[in-house]
Length: 266
Length: 321
Image (cartoon, rainbow over all chains, first blue to last red; front, side, top):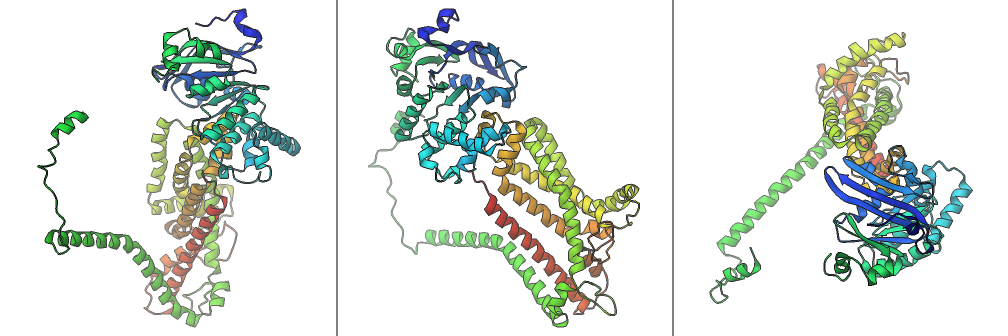
């Protein structure tokens, strides 16, 4: 169990950006996430690892209330955004506003069948931003942050679907960054990509943490070890262990964590 | 069954019967070939029959129309402003019938395309799946009402209702016929549009929601553009149904060829004319008789043109996913 005391809030000088407090989530009568508590540190990369079906993606999707789109789902517990300490799962908070502050990149690149420009501008357009110059600047900034600007600056009007898989995923990252989110959620962002594109995205994610807090779900333990600052290991819906990434990978405290990271199951 | 058991049950290779190849003249091979040939030709026949019927219809329409154009110059037919084939001094200008057809179709589409699309958005994007399973078939039931019922509905219910608001409205008029055709084709438009929207993969919707879009924005900015190709098909089918609709206009619109764009007046459509004239006794080969085929050919060309336009639109504006 992770403590929520003051010392955890400033672990190693890191400041908490959000805190999950005894969060459970169920589809119908099946509880998929069971009383998970963990901190999310500001401008750090937090990785969630665990075998398939352990609830890590479900937990990630609680952060932007994605589950609200489907029926028969229930949250219990809190995800508090800090420092204002507001529970984003509370029913009096509009999920649309949550998603405006916490954006998401999915497992499979899912650009809209629109131009490269319009894909990145989409988040601004749905917020009603009209000023052409502001939209253009933001699109350029987001594409540059996603390391895609130089490759696409001459064909912003071309269809996003003409890009390669890795480029499409970086476009989706640009789309998620364009609205200046506080937290970016990455759901196995490289699982559909080749090793070179994967390396590219990993580098990118590491540079992004200068400005934004990142939570990444990954199947790839090496990836978690390479890029994350903190790692949470989930198993059967529970958070088994949470800690700084080097410590968790070299000296896991729980036997199940050790079995998983040494490849005995999963 | 485990792989070990399976291996045990396989006979040793030495005992297995070897299958020898037969010559081309072997009776079993001949029979097999024959059977395949019969099946193939049956399939071809089934697939070809609709193509054949379509071609036959076009052939008959064209061949019966040709003698008509010996009497009436084609320019006069296309630009003449009067259509009076049964008068002693017959005039054969198709424009009044085309105008009537466009007017009823236009009114019908003004109603059916927005209503059908909105209904489809609601069904596909807003309604819970369980409610949709009840509501969609109910809406499709509208398409099961016989068109003659719609015709009397237009004449005896909609027209008197409209007359309360528009006292000058003629008893037979294009407006109420057009509106009722619009209601009639809503289920075609909405049902096909809904299929097109639901075929849009949900990962596109999630992408839209994930950056903070509302349901409405997701429907209109992502789902509709992505499903545009299917929506166009739905609209084109609606247009074809409206252009070809006969009973409602024959009953409620007055069957008077009338070159007008005023929907409160009576008018005749191409289909209404065909119905009216085919009911009378026309001597075979007379010019009145041929005029039916000419009208039919015009109607076919119109629907074909709409289909081609729809096809072109679909290719131009498609957002393939």
